[in-house]
Length: 287
Image 1 (cartoon, rainbow, N blue to C red):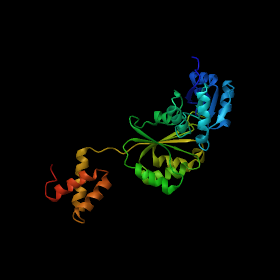
Image 2: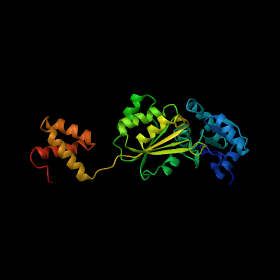
Image 3: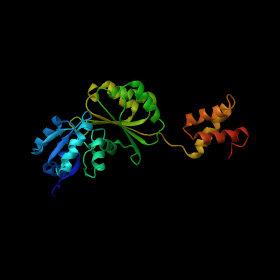
Image 4: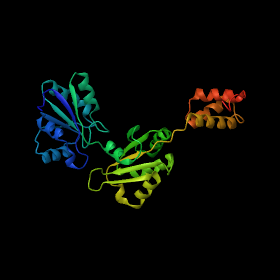
């Protein structure tokens, strides 16, 4: 393969173990004209390890927007470029979105060079459902905002995936226990592919205990994988709504009862309102 000029390559790099670099990634990095890196201090040792010497331009969250134009000018002038992040696949909770979007809008060909990705690696060993999942990236740093976001996700039936840092992991898991419950199935993957890689699991409560008992488990980079809630059948949902509405209608107006029931059960407001009308007129149970 010969690298063509005027192309933007999005190149995944190892998240820990340098042996995870792909042959294609090595070839692209050795053939492009220059490399845009989230942190040159992280990328240069990788290139040295691979025996590659290329110009490196720093592109991170604080300067990406202002550097996009000059980078695109270089590519449009015929130079080829590789975009890399500190580790893993660029743009997955890392900079690069504005660059890639602008490149595509300018007609520049953007080519993925796939490889390591922490969220995929954690999912693959979690033992939790992977047919449907939701990647949330990093939660808010403040507990109040974090709990608010977790509450919004508490009724999700898909597997949830989060990234977290060492200085917030214990507090984040504590908040998850409060919102999701200690018994919610979960797995905590730490330092994936690195020397001190660990995968803790079973429940959020178990994970919190391990973090509290062993301070070493709070060091490193983390991926939290949490099982979604079990979906009830439509029949069970209707029965739950009917039972709750019968209680509420004794204490409050129909509209208020419908609103409370739909919010609590996570059902359509209109559907619950129609069930309330049927119950009030004696048509509900046994449908």
